[in-house]
Amino acid sequence: MKIDILERGGYKAAKRIKTIIEDKLARLDKYFEDEANAKVVLIKVAKQEKLEITITCKGMLFRCEVVSDNMYNNIDYALPKLEKQIVRENEKKKDKKKGKNLVEFPFEFLEEQPEELPAIYKTKTFDLDPMLVDDARFAIERLGHDFFAFLNAESGRINILYKRKDGKFGLIDLKY
Image (tube, rainbow, N blue to C red; front, side):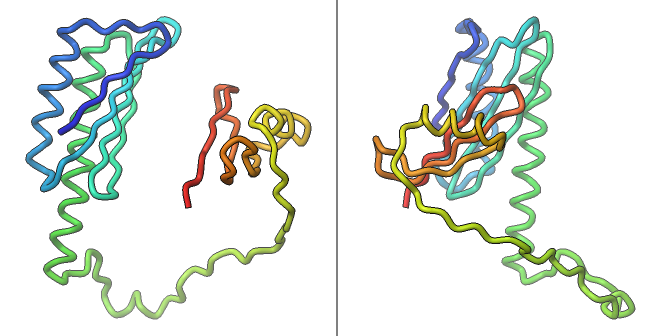
């Protein structure tokens, strides 16, 4: 497994904690047939420490986020969560290969009508004018929206700028 460890928010990771993370994530290799990539982010948030782990392999994404007073505890809490996600996904794949239905209902439940999806009640169409990311940020503030789609003048691609719960902004750069 390829592991990238990033430090943010002023967190400085000791070599020992990096070694522990690499050793414990290496134990998850047994679940992956192909090479998996893990991105580990260590963050100092106020008086607490946050650990974010994202593992990708063949289009599958496994993610876990833990906050506590101690990064060592975060590792111990996060890895079982990730392992549970991976095991659950592997079981789904095995059941699919065997042709099993994951959920089988007795005949009387089949008489119920499936729940209808809500209808699209409004459609908007607008032209994408090229603009800079800062201009899109100001547009979000002016409009009072949580997100804004625009054509990035620098890259020429469609981007989505969104406002996070912490008040900061995130940018989604679509590749097509």
